Length: 118
Image 1: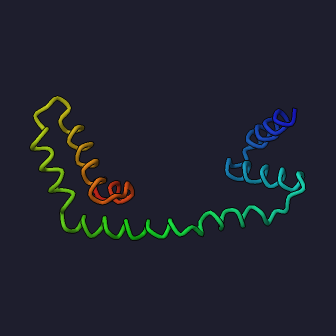
Image 2: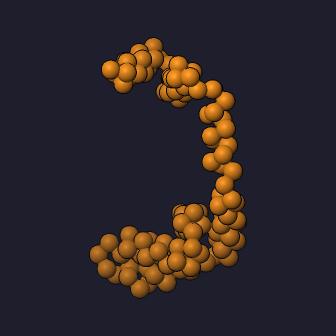
Image 3: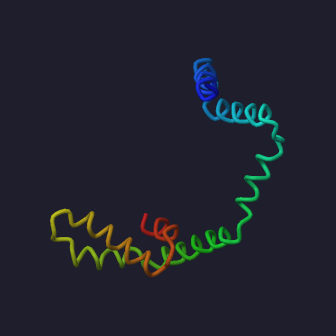
């Protein structure tokens, strides 16, 4: 029953033309307060997830991808793979996927691959 009331409240807010982000955030905050939780729990939970040591590597992977991008490694890798499989049907798509796979294996990061090849 409470799920139905939450959905009705959400649709009512959306029908009143409240932006989706504010409707979801306000409804979530109202449910936190009505459940007896402190509203300070939400920012603390967000900050605790962003405080991870693993996320420190993401800017460094992006820096590495920019260095490789300026060096032309992505373009050379794509040209080599395209020369290898470009004559196949759908060769452009196959070359893109293979060059992304090879670059991801070299760099070890999908973030760096997306930034360099993309």
